[in-house]
Length: 96
Image (cartoon, rainbow, N blue to C red; front, side):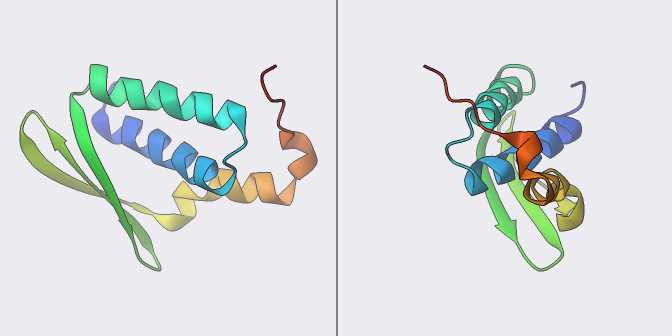
């Protein structure tokens, strides 16, 4: 991911899946990868999320400066909605 915006978008999308499916090991591993990218590649910290009926608002600190971005709920929740519509395609295989 080259931009902070793209990385935050992907991170938030998988975070929403993780929150809804806490036992989904693949989602948890993917979120961890994006967590690391945000910190190591983009210097992002102190992420906080707010939502309303239409948007997700992501507040964060980058290089000592407070920033905020927003994403439409329908874009962020598309992966979770797909999983919920076709759960057989997204079976969790826990690590042994």
